[in-house]
Amino acid sequence: GPLIEAAESYNMMNELGYWTLETALKGLVDFDLQGLDITLSVNISPTQLYDTRLIANLKSLSHKYSIHLSRLELELTEDIAVSNSLMVKMQLAELHQLGIKIAVDDFGKGYSNLAYIREITLDALKIDKTFVMELSDNPVNKAIIEAARVIGNAKHCEVIAEGVETTEQRLYLQAHQCYQYQGFLFSKPLEEE
Image 1: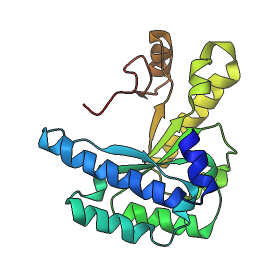
Image 2: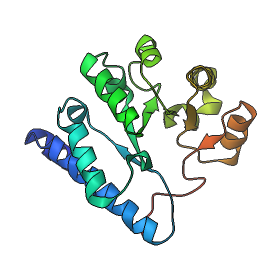
Image 3: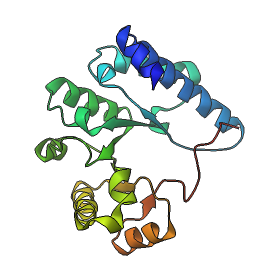
């Protein structure tokens, strides 16, 4: 959206990224007060993964809000996850050691470097909604979902189908051993309250 474009043009993606992470941790404090013990997923930008201050910043936010980092899941776009950079690989390994979960968002939409997906530690693969929403239109969509499930099994990570809008889609996914979903069938995006 316009906010992201502005942040990119002023080289402020890192600041926006840290503001987002801090807002997420504050949100977890609020949820805890209401007795909701949940994990929060936050998108992370490529520039943050190349930032040497990322780990230190996360540790300091964790300390500031007394929230354990295992309550966070960072969602990377596939393009960052497979950028095949040693720096990214090291940062992801370190994030994982802190207990942070790592998910690849929009899987199948980007440039899938499967050799690299093999190398990184992952907790979840989220199948891009375009394959789910057009399930019945194209047999290749079904094959991509099946491939994601097989990769997820081999990597012992969750596979989550995005963009589930109909009961038919859910039943198809269920019948093909994909048991986690997100989409309008369950809820539209909601305000924090």
